Length: 405
Image (cartoon, rainbow, N blue to C red; front, side):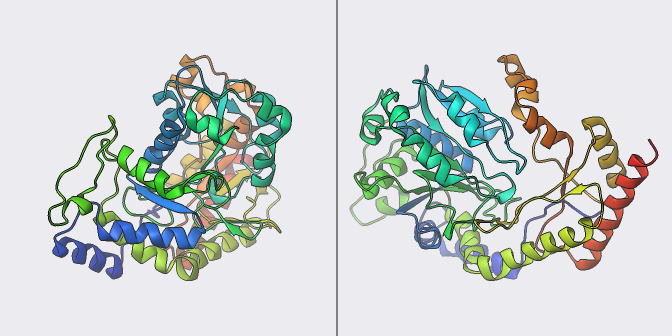
């Protein structure tokens, strides 16, 4: 069975983890701080804080901005649950918007859903393909939208507009108009989960790029404290001679990254552009070449004049099919020895969000994208022989089911 997305664990990764274990420092320490610095340089962000997951990063950002009961946060209907669950955790209301044919959020739908209760917009780079960030950033700066912004906290008053919090869980290394993702919105959050291009097993990072009237060093200290139960000193600081004493200034969270995780991240980041992204692009190109010759395949956008994907997920779509037929095709693919997936089931289809009154019919393009989509394997150790088998199996499954209906 060809797996869907196993992590890359080679000797360099193993050696880095063993070195960390033998160092005696395994929680948040020097390697986590170095990983933050390297991510800052890589993304051109003003400051980076590493955390335990992208979900933790999103929630930290919402909590810092003061999102609370009575507030609304705009988020795509077509995304993973984490993007919306963190809004629920804060007591606020997710306001879903529809997607375009590129799978990403529709800016015109965002504009229609903005109210005086809107505090944050969370665009999501589905499959690693960047959203239309210039349009989204410009939207919240429009005079009539800024005038309607109802600030409830000092951070909201200071910003004076809706916060753009980019869910870039898929898109480390992606490029938008010559700039890497991580430096394009107020705050960007990455994921380093086991299936991501760059993995630290679990983990994430917040990239801060707020206007210059925010002190980013102070912001880092504030959110670092919030990520450590409100503790004013992290473990590395407390281990300095005579520096044991600390205070608890708020009821914070346990959201810190460990040096074991950061050790993996340091290895992968150093070779990311010249190695990992090169390999993943070659897989995308292979699929593109072999499926473009069919009359039923919709190839995902992954390179345009303005955007370059991180090549995270190859989201093949099949013209004219419905959810039932897609599932039959997937079952045949599994039976023939290839693991596939779907990114994603839209949130209004999920039991929890349906129970809150959301209806899938309100987001027609999101549903259309979902019911026609099959995510194909993309991982570093995928061989050409395996790719050939994947193409053969997928073509056979699609054509046998489509043409025998």
